[in-house]
Figure (tube, rainbow, N blue to C red):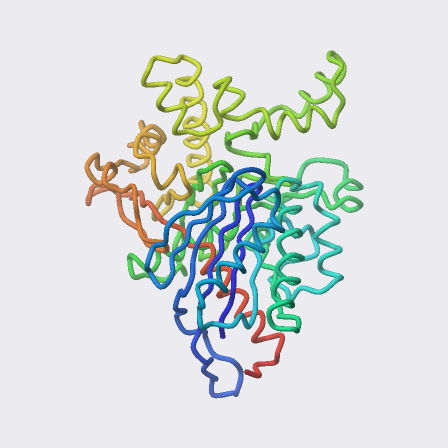
Length: 422
């Protein structure tokens, strides 16, 4: 089976075409575990909304990066299908898997997409406006593009970031608010980046050769969006993002943790509406608000080297918040077997990793300077230790492979949906 995966960001679209061998059946006749997939076609469209770039890798061969005006995700999907056709890849698309950021209270597992599923995803768009709209646009465009190629509908699966956090216990997922708000409006901690956290834990387990059963991990996913998760036995038991993706760590443009009284105060003392304040907390805060100019950590680190004090403060606040969550999750887990860094910043910034772990010797978390400096480019799905051999709480850098994880989930979901029939 060939599965085409779409991983929609607010201004980007990653994709993967992966081939799985015919499934093996267990003794009971039920579908067996999926074999290891063979990536055929992988790439990304970046800077959607303007002059976008499309990078391709076909069967491990990197292609030239191309540019085109791409106003929205629909056009990005059309460009990807066009590229598939132009390259004459002998791999018809049998199914598709889509990352969806917010599944609300309806979806605790991956599901086959139908109109009812799309309607429910749309209903929670306000809780993840930058992402769920992009996800919906991608799903609809992919359905139409696939139909144009094959003349029929291709089964599609929605894989939810929130689903990985369904195992968070009530005492960690419940806000101390009137019960009516929780029941009537579904206000609770949902958590996000679940696909990335799950992939990070899986990469660690495969690298060290141990099962996630009996393992305690703290996964720290740092990019434009950032979150930390406490994982026990492969299951999420707490996470820094909550009802929406804004809670928790400092992010590129999102404030993360702040006093909820701030919204009322600003509404009373400025001419801003609640909607405007919400937008500013999501789109003009975080690293951008702290630095005054940049939301990209790379630019902030360059400015810091030139003596920019606001850039230095942005780095200090960012790292302090992560360090505080690591300490909290050590308490939640009763200790940990490893701390895992992932995401664009987590994978590629040795300086940020070092600043986060500074002063953490008390719990055994130390970095090896050479190992840390060398860990900047890893193959997808791999992990490398950046701590000294004697460290009692080792740190790893993990290169998450969300697309492959989505493909596996899509295959598993389709196997059950079809009742195990090939």
